[in-house]
Length: 511
Image 1 (spheres, one colour):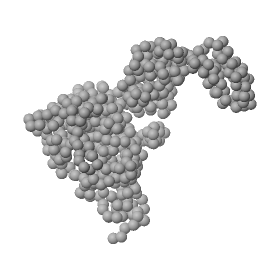
Image 2: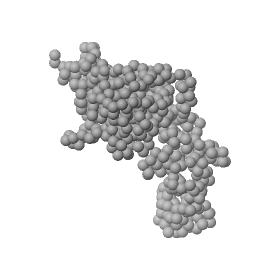
Image 3: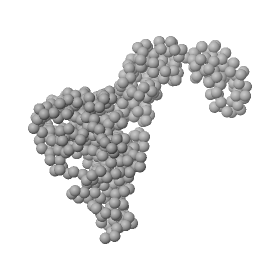
């Protein structure tokens, strides 16, 4: 039968997702070796975070990590999943050089988290939520706990090295139903799950450190000109660790699968699923192997681990640890604190940023700053100054040495006009390694705003006399030129002049 791309009337993508989340426990899933997901541990020299259990030495017996179980429950509750009251462990058998046991301890028929659903908001390319657009409901099949494999390092095809530091790190695999139909919906789902997992403290969510990896399952329903439908074979794209790669892999498969059907005539069915890798440079997927079915893994119950029974009290205790989730927090910031949608999202995406914001604005308001200005100044400090200090150091906001009490003092100083926004950046940076108050730092560094009207008037008179052409431009209607004069006054003051007051004085004198 001769097939042509012109035979295809419509293409409907079908996308499901597997998201692998490294849980931020101190130790590994089945041993007391330090986990690479623990802050700072990922820099350890190769093959140093191991022990007899990780190395699968004879006689070594696993012990389940309670913290990993509880973090899995916490994520499940945040995702709206049903928790199973009895969960068991299974051996998933396959041989690979970075899997010392030749099997992976995982969960098959009784995972820790059962079915659930998420209403995923629409997002733009930068990940900002469009609150006015409809949400996409994505059903969740399960979330099961397993151990991560090690890492292979390939040297241009000549040889491979094995690093087992990552082996045994607790991994929560979140599996969705195929309820996404575009690259945008797939990326939004990935971003939203990451946002929730970070909010409950389950993971650091640092993509380049492998804290989260995405594996979309993609195929298409092809509607032909005669009204019949063809379903293409499912392709699973492995180990994507950026949203750019996720979007690129999904978009490529959606475009390529109709062409593959034209060339091969292959349709979805048993044994037809394949796995592919993604080439970031070429923006294409590359065939790796045909995909194993569940029977190929020869699952059987893990004899060295007892089932975990989850009673109502345990679920209640874990549920009590659930923080306010990001979407609810954003809506509160918008409706109650008066923040813009983007500002609300920037703060709500970081637990540390949200904690600093909520505490510092409340303390500032309690200290006499009007509530509205406390909210506004605190949000500006978090989004601008605190984020800048973290980025400059290559740290997260939570890793900075910042206390909400001192940030509240700086909020009050900004409200009173004692320091400029630029000076606030410098003060926050210095607060990260100093225990001095922001007021003491501002005085020591000469960052206190000069509001001495007499001195400012004198500086303004000097600048007006020195810049007659600029003054005439302003009088002629070029109002933006006053910024140049303000800058000259600030130079004379050594940066301490109150820009707002300077502008008022200059405007009065020139006009």
